[in-house]
Amino acid sequence: MAGGREYSQHQKKIIGRYYDNHDTIILTRLGEIQTEIALAAGNEKKLNTLWKRAATALAKTSIKPEIASKIVEAQDLEALGRQVSKLSR
Image 1 (cartoon, rainbow, N blue to C red):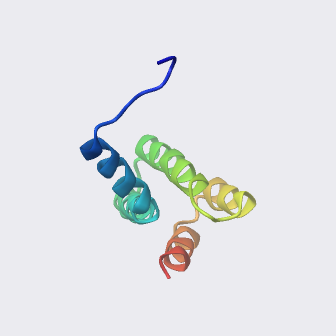
Image 2: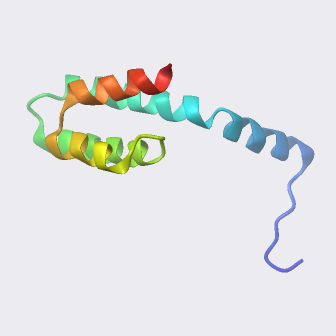
């Protein structure tokens, strides 16, 4: 068995459910990041970290990369919220 990994049936079901719900997981993560950004106003270090996390999460969605980069570069919380709402429909 060169380089492969065999999973038990239980593990395969867990992996399958994760990927079945991946969109929901990312949307939830973006919503949590959005809330944390709103609460972290004034703390530049934390805000920078949160916006990096937002960029990573946005990259895993169907949002066009140029739109995501504009949101992150401008650190536009309202635009982030609009995109999260649009994705959740």
